[in-house]
Length: 255
Image (cartoon, rainbow, N blue to C red; front, side, top):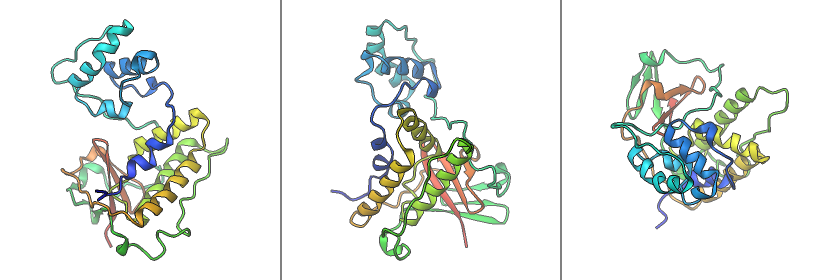
């Protein structure tokens, strides 16, 4: 039964047709071996890098053991307690112009809300269509992105594009189904390496999401724990995003 909208698979995995070598994203010795195998014929049966990272180190080792042996790559078992690396954010900071509402360590962090000084930010969940602004799912509501020109600071452009993407997703009631900044930026660099138009792909995916949202129900979704200070970044004065173990949570300034 189609009871929820599977937003993430629509918006990002479908954008990638053939991923380039992933060595620049490798954060551990096991990930480096994974990338070496994926670049050759012995890694065809392996999952994607993001899927691989969701496994504990012992499972990562078992996934790699047989193909590594066939490829003649030395593979060392993980040490006790070793954890898989969390997908890192590329060196593309969130907007420098977005003032932090307070020092992150001074904020209160709860599952449903954050409080930074006098400001309170509430978790944005998915919303049913009856609670959207009029015309939210119409052709007039568009996600507008323009590919950065040669004189544009790429990191600033990417941060601004992500902010526009988050605003667009909130407008159609998918606040709890957004991509992390890390995944958003990673997709941009992968498509750029393929010579594909990132902006057009994102815009087309947003239009498809609006069509699907008209007929499919969405689960509200809530985090299973409070975010940690190091997981959260301000997008602007009214939005804070938290990447909690690869899951994105958006908190909006309360009225």
